[in-house]
Every structure is written in C-alpha cells, then in structure tokens.
Image (cartoon, rainbow, N blue to C red; front, side, top):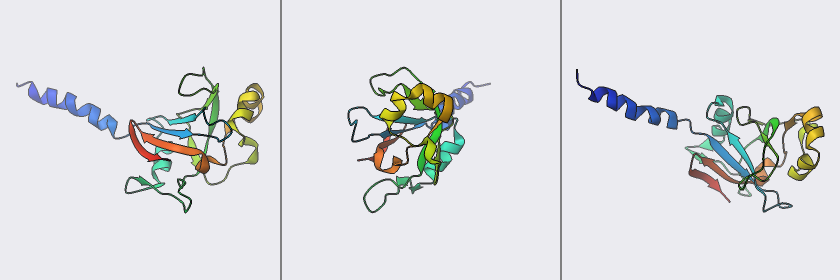
Amino acid sequence: MPRWPILLLLISIPEAFAAKTAYTLTLVDEREPERPFLVKIDESNARGIKTLESYFRDGIVVRDEEGNPEIGVVNGPVEEVIPHSRHEWSFRIDPKKVEFADLTTEVCDGSFMYVEDHLEEWLSTVGNYCPWSTRRLVREIRQGKKILYQR
C-alpha cells in the first residue's frame, strides 16, 4: 500500500486546526498607553470565538460611526499571571472563558490600574472583569498573526 495518502493526511491536519486560531485583542487605556492589556481567546473557547466572530461582516470587524469596533463588553474570570514584555499586568481574563456581553453588572467594571492595585480583593470578591469601555479601548484584533483590526 502506498504511503502518500498518510502523508497527505498529516499535511492537512494543521490546516484543520488553523480554522479556529486563537484571537488576541489589544486594549489600551489612555491613562496607561505604554501598558497594553491583552485579551486572548483560546482556540478551545468556541463560545468566545463564535461571539467575537458575530461582530464581523464578511471577515471584517464592524465599526461604529467613530471607527470603534462594534463588539460587546469583554467579560470573564480574572486570573493572576506573571507580567511580561507584551502584557505588563499581573492579571488577565481566562482565555478559555472570555465572553462578550451587551450588558454586565457594574461591580466587574474598572480600570486596569484599579484591578491591578486591588488584585487580591478583586480575585476574592468580584472574580470577573468586564471593562465597560472595551469598544473604545481596542487598538488591535488579531486572529493568530493576521491583523483584523488596527487603530
């Protein structure tokens, strides 16, 4: 039996996984412009991916009259992380549980700096993070390495 069908199968497997590449949103607050806040949506987070993609039309991010992306409020559980060069905050939203909402409770809204300064309290009492001004904070949306939106 020829081995080339197996080789073709192995070559096509990565293409199947590439269809649901993770997304990354770069949020920037004017008060801390040098410290972007990255929101990653894991490729296993089908709900988060589907919701984000619902804000696209023909693969292009829909924008409002001011040029801001028409996406809902980023929302999800907070995790403590070690800051690094691209994400200098000591917390993030869990990439496997990121969602987008039309409405959220006020208790999970806050600036990046406020959450950073009160992280232990935030983790123990609030749990979720939902910056209401997400739409105005988005500077870039990527799917893998491909830029879908950039301000």
